[in-house]
Amino acid sequence: MNDLARLRARLDGDLVTPDHPEYDTVRRPADPLYQDARPALVIRCRSETDVALGIEHARRTGTTVVPRGGGHCFAGRSSTSGIVLDLAALDGIAVSGSCAVIGAGARLAEVYTALHAHGRTIPAGCGATVGIAGLALGGGIGLLGRVHGLTADRLTGARVVLADGRTVDCDAEREPDLFWALRGAGGGQFGVVVSLTFDTVPEPVATRFELRWRRPPVADLLAAWQDWAPDLPDAVTADLTAGEEAVLFGASLLGEAPTRELLQGFCDSIGVMPETDVRGGMAYHRLKRSFEALDSAPSEGILRSRSMFFAQAARPDTIKALAADLAAAPRRRCHLTAMGGAYNRVPEAATAFAHRGERFLLQLAASAGDPWLDRTWEAAYAESSQRVYPNFPDPQLREWESAYHGPNLARLQAVKRAYDPDRCFDFPQSV
Image 1 (tube, rainbow, N blue to C red):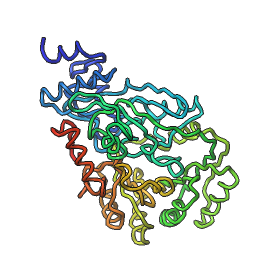
Image 2 (image 1 turned 135 degrees about the vertical axis):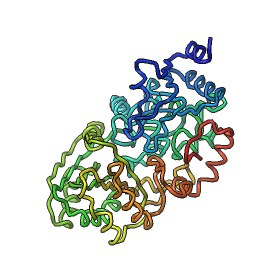
Image 3 (image 1 turned 180 degrees about the vertical axis):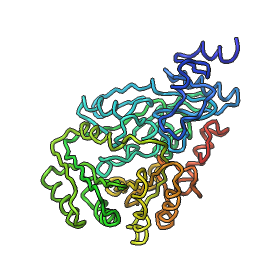
Image 4 (image 1 turned 90 degrees about the vertical axis):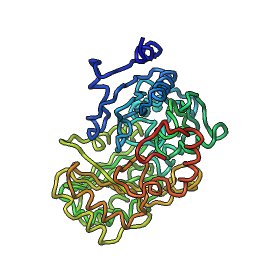
């Protein structure tokens, strides 16, 4: 019996090799940019034992191994020519009081639905198929974040299979350095997380809003937004996406009337009235689902994106550079996410997520071959905080260590040496 046959016999799940009839389906991550990747093996893990066996096989054969939850990594880190540990089947969700234990393979739509049944939720993103593990381990920004912080800030524990095959439970008291590192450094760095424990929050009733400009005054919108959205009450998150059209969208816990008043003030400052859709009294899980179309709008071809944080409002010349030629190609996008609030009330060193003093997050996207993306990113990055969200990794990023991790880098490197001294979990820009 050869190595693969022995491995297959020991697994609870499936071993998918290139000759398997489902290989072409199973090998592909969610991001089209990396769907040509051809792993030597995909292990569809059904237990943490499967994860340990996959790591053991990788170490014994000198093969690269990566975990895959949702498969949405912007840098393709959930793809490899080696071994993919597909965690999709580890998707159980158990709720007791305010505590939720969630398998690393669970997707956000499943998480919101399961928590809603108990009147609970967590601050997280809108993408229905995004994996909970990758989101939480890199931070986790969403429409409740200005009230309740990052997804990682609600993480109270994790179960992790380490490079040496041991499975450990970590929290503030057990393996505290590992637990610290898991909250915001990015996934796949120190071990394979198989489940996460969260302190959930009561699911709110919220006001949903979506304002759309068909022919947007882009520079005016960007300038007005950066002076307005980050300073709104914490209970209001208003994000802006601009391209051929512009959409201001988000959630408010203030109620419909005061929300409309805030939105009207913003529109008056622009001077161009948008199409407006404001709906109060929505259960939060319904509100999140209603934005899935914005998060995953269909388009042809492959998109690439780059991002940065700003601690202060951008200068007029930078706004002009962002707006220039934005509408000249149909797939160019400029997305602004408001920070502040609870995001910034956590000390910089309290978790691995180092970006606790930022005003907003800017993300640019365009077709993979469009030179506008890099040209515009370079113009804006020079004025930014020169910090980058770990969940938006950028393979072209210079000085990535400080950009992703800031002053927390040295402690992260110490955790890496302690838990993965042989760099079993290694990829470009890994700690």
